[in-house]
Length: 206
Image: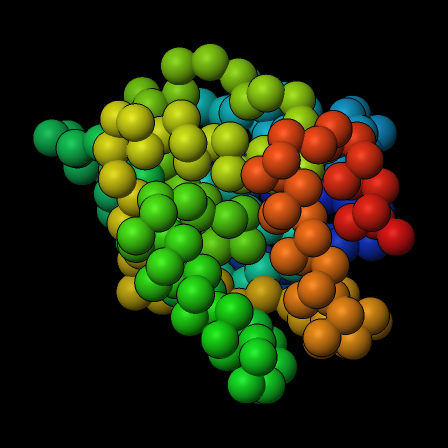
C-alpha cells in the first residue's frame, strides 16, 4: 500500500484534489489529511499522519504541489515490490509560473540541494520506505523537511524520480518574486545560525 499524507491548512485542499481525485477509492492507496485542528506545526501533522498510515511507502504530499498520475502509479508499483529495496526522495521540482529566477530556484533545488546535498524539501513531495522512520520528527515550526532529510541521508542518499512536482507560486505572486526570494534566504541563514524556529516561522508567516 501507498500512504499519501497531506499536512493541509485551511483552504488548501482545492490545490491538490484534482491530481489525486482518481486515487480516492484505489485499493492500494490511503489518503490521510491532517489539518491545523489536529496539530499546529507541519512537523506535528506529519508525525500524526505517519502514525495513522499503514503503507510500505509513505508520501508526504505538499498541499500546494501537484503530481501527475504517473508519479503516483510509480510509487504504487514500488510499494508492491516483494523484494523492495529501501528508497526515499522526491520528484523534479518546478513552479506553475515561468520566470528566470523561479527556474533558477527549481534548478538549484533539484541539482544542488537534492542531488549534491541530500536535502529534499516538501514541495518536491517527499516519499520514503517506512523502514527508514526510526523516530518522530523534531517539532520544529519550520524546516522540518530539512530535519527529515538529515535523518534519512545518514542511511541512504535520496533519489529524484523523473516526474514534475508542480508547486504553486502563490507566495511569490503575493509578496513579489525578489522579496520572497530574499525572505527565503534570510530564513535559511537563520536556520544555519540555529535561531529559534518559532522566530523563523513568524517571519515566514508575515
